[in-house]
Image 1 (cartoon, rainbow, N blue to C red):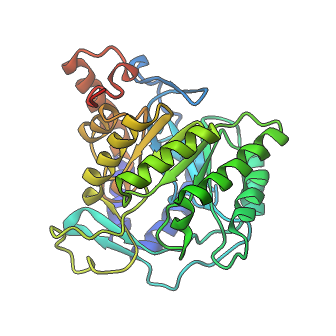
Image 2: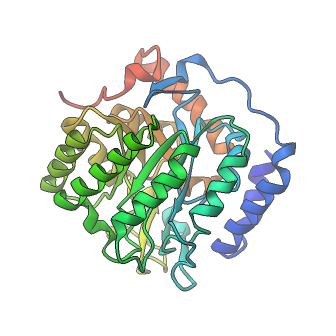
Amino acid sequence: MIFDAAAAVLRALPPESAHRATIQAAKIFAGFLPQPGADDPRLRVQALGLAFPNPIGLAAGFDKDAQVPGAMARFGFGFVECGTVTPRPQAGNPQPRLFRLKEDRAVINRMGFNNGGMAAAAARLRARARHGIVGINIGANKDSADRIADYRAAFEALAPLADYVTVNVSSPNTPGLRGLQNRDELGKLLGILTGERTRLSLRQPMLLKIAPDLDAHALDDIAAVIGEAAIEGLIVSNTTIARPATLRSANAKEQGGLSGAPLFEPSTHILREMRQRTSVTLIGVGGVSSGAEAYAKIRAGASLVQLYTALAFRGPGLVARIKRDLLACLQRDGFATIADAVGAGVKK
């Protein structure tokens, strides 16, 4: 596939330069990309009050400023999540801040929510052709004196323009942000945002994105809070601050969040644990690079699956390959649809 060949060329560039070039290329060539063919009906997913043509989504972090959601949907994604977007523009952390771990099929990033701010993202979302499911991921500015107020402002500006909203309190690259996963702070935050949703008469589902570095007590607290707040879903998980002993790359000791293949097992473990604790819709993300791995997330309780890091290593043709492999997994195990397989590997 020509786009996979182009991806191989981009990998010769420094990682952040390659990312910028990819976004620019998607903007330039979006109108020339063919619309993807209809997905096999067995891949359709009804979740969050939305009808997804297939369960494979593009995770937040790729299209931070909502520049190319339509272009990325044309590669066959069932949905695209933009962001993380903060109220005010911010440059993020000093460069270099993005590192490939080629030998480990992984990436470490300490980007720090670099983005153009909610006003610019809102203008793009408002102007986009409303085709495909697009979510928006919101966060707080690094120097904010009131982070909960930041989430409220971003929610008010962006939620009406997206199909769902993700509240990101789990990035390891904004100091203190993960503290918002604590029970009292999280309850306050989600209570304010659900109240804001009611005030604005919005129906957009709300999801919480959590870290993979949480113990059982923290998972219990999160399950309790999301039940009280009545939000619709969880994204499991963000990047990890852990460094497995198996890492081989010279970049393995860089600071930041680790994504890619080493994240697959810990994120799937947390996904399975949350499936046992809650009945909300789960989106599994972390280390997915094949249909078998997407299927494992689904069997662990995910109704939907996201990827990003593997796309950088394997190119956009990966999406079609994953969907083909998913169908083979369903047929092998005797499931008629994706929905039948959700949670099949989790003890009741």
